Image 1: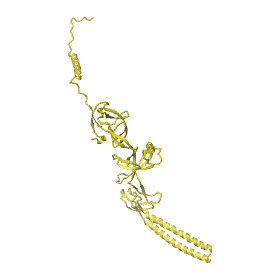
Image 2 (image 1 turned 90 degrees about the horizontal axis):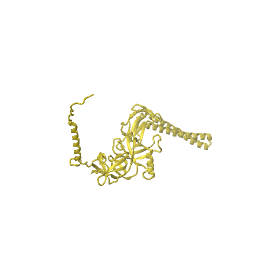
Image 3 (image 1 turned 90 degrees about the vertical axis):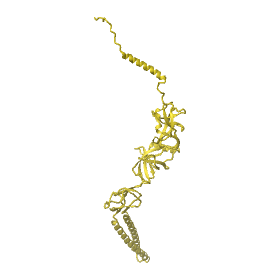
Image 4 (image 1 turned 135 degrees about the horizontal axis):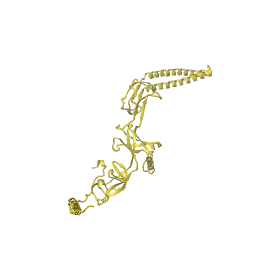
Length: 398
């Protein structure tokens, strides 16, 4: 059993809790004064934005496709006769004209064949001339009954046969001369020639089968670009043609524009000149072809290119900077200013990019002021400080 202390010793006074309480009360009082007094925080600054009006223009939608350049004409050079190459007459990789001499095959065996054919023709003519004289004499002798009917007919038929022999000899001579002519292999088209696959002294095989490839020539101007148009696009074009909104490539040539992989914009202008007659079920596409001038020889077969063709008729539309467009859960919108410079949320329907600007199909008016810079500081219904500018692509903003 504990006994109560004889004396009550009081606890020592602690200043820290009391001091903390005083500080908290002072802070609360200061906050209440500062919220309404001259020492309070400054009012929020008005957001600054840059605005521009949409560009109103007659527009046309374009559909883009990937393609490969191909030569309008490509020829593999083979020899029509066999023999040894005696001369290569072109510089590899240069342009040649139609009729230029490319290769020479040793002509001596073919010259001998021509001489023999000429001799055979001369002999056939001599024999035919003699047979003709005998046939003429046989007719006179038959009238005088100096020879039999059978002998007369034999001589006449013999003369006819010898004349046929002359024609055969003449044909053999023409063939021999052709073979001699074929010993000089000339360019059948104008274009750029490849390298020589055979050199002087090599034996080449001619004829119709298993012939030796000597070189190739491709025409460069104009040049084709082949594309594969998807089924949906083809059906759209045909519906447009049906309603008179666009000409059909099946009946007339339509414009096409092209760019190489290192080019901006669409510097090459041409036209679609061919659409295939059936769809490839393996790819779901139809092969089409556009033709472009290539006078400067910039393009070559095999290059990759982008091609665009009209995807709509002309219509009145608006263009805005693509960076001014916001995304709201898959829907597009822009901020426009009302007469009091307050921001207004405006849903819009977009079209394709055109010359660096975005086509707006609906939701805007030509006199709307669209926020193009400062979008992050804009809130619906909040007044802003607007600076006007021109509606230019982001890459060329002044």
